[in-house]
Length: 89
Image (cartoon, rainbow, N blue to C red; front, side):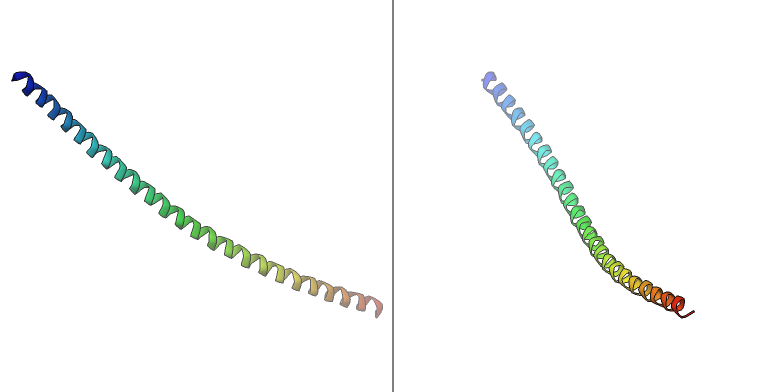
């Protein structure tokens, strides 16, 4: 009878330890999931920032192209005026 009681106590202790480990591992999994969700949220936020910066870059490059075109026109006009002044001086 004592052997059975000891065996039952050992099994109960083993069960309790297993439940403790399971609860601990479950908490670790929850913590890991929270960290993963936070990292994914940060990644989405950074992706939005990257997209906004890329859009700004595209707009700035387009503006630069337009300004360079206008500069070339003005330089040509200045050259024409300079040439006109040289020939008519």
